[in-house]
Amino acid sequence: MESVIPFLKWAGGKRWFVNQHLDGIPAYTGTYFEPFLGSGAVFFALKPNRAILSDRNEDLIGTFLAVKRNWQGVQALLRRYQQLHSKRFYYWMRRSRPRTATARAARLIYLNRTCWNGLYRVNKRGEFNVPKGTKKTVLLNSDDFDQISQALEHASLLVSDFEPVIQQAQQGDLIFVDPPYVTSHSDNGFLKYNEELFSWNDQVRLRDCLLEAKKRRAHILVTNADSPLIRRLYEKSFSIRAVTRSSVIAASPARRGIRPELIIRSW
Image (cartoon, rainbow, N blue to C red; front, side):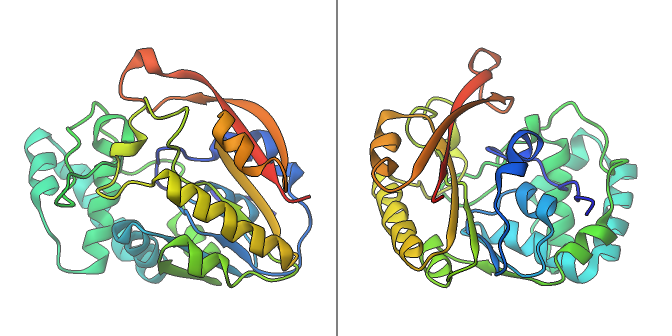
């Protein structure tokens, strides 16, 4: 089955995982759960028949829903924005507050593709505040919004905390979890991407929630920072494998490069 290329660039995105480790995912017969959706790279690679996708970021989930329901309208707006793109237009779009779901989705995709380094960051008021980047391409050759919409056809998209979503998983389901990193990666700006931080207490709450899902015999796959704290959090009940990946979205070039990562599994 041919995978779908994600249409967003997202901090902590899992394209590296798709390219290097996707074959390690076990066969499963149930529903695919992803409670920290981001760009959805793993979802689009697997293209499951049933999925529940969620994130706390309302703008992100709204964008996925708009592409699912009206990809033609989103693509038409992006084509227009390609013609209008300039420094002045970028900052006008950054200040804008579109009224329709289609226009809000096109705005987020436009800003994601033309802002500095594809970074999603908002201030405490929830306002997108990333400066204009150097890229000028709004519509990409890899774009296939029709195929993306089809991949999302059998997926439920929710604005939600992770806990009520994971609690739905049962035997035969697969949960892929990629939470915000707050330990060894805390110097790369991840804590500043959203107005609400993902705290250490949230990491513990996530682990406890996954332990309960494991008792229900759901398959669990977690990626997280390679930190002694994270290792201690999972080592008694899960299998842990250390890997490396490239980081290209840090706040400064000096902080980019090869990063340690953990792949945590219930099998």
